[in-house]
Image (cartoon, rainbow, N blue to C red):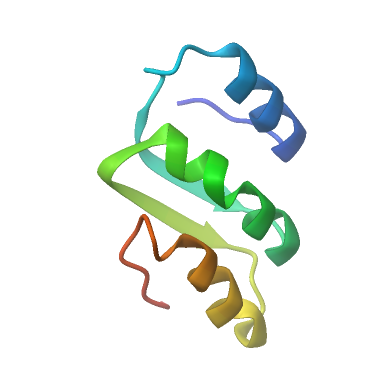
Amino acid sequence: MLTFTPEQLLSASKQQPADYIVDVTIANILAGPLQSLAPTLAQRTRPNGLIALSGILEEQAEVVMESYRANFAMQPA
C-alpha cells in the first residue's frame, strides 16, 4: 500500500515510470483536489481498475463524478 498527499501524488506521478499502475485507488480529500487530480488518478489506475472517492459533500458528488466518468464507472454510495 502506498499513501500520498495530493502534492506528493503529483510529484510522484512525474518521477515514477509510466508503467507504475495500481489496481485500486482510494482518495479521501476535498472535492476541488479530487477534480484536479482526476487525470493523474486515472493515469495511475489500471484500465478496469477500481477507484473510491470520499470526503465529498452530497451536493458536490455529481460534479466530482463527472470528472472521473471518462475512465471509471461512477456511482454514489
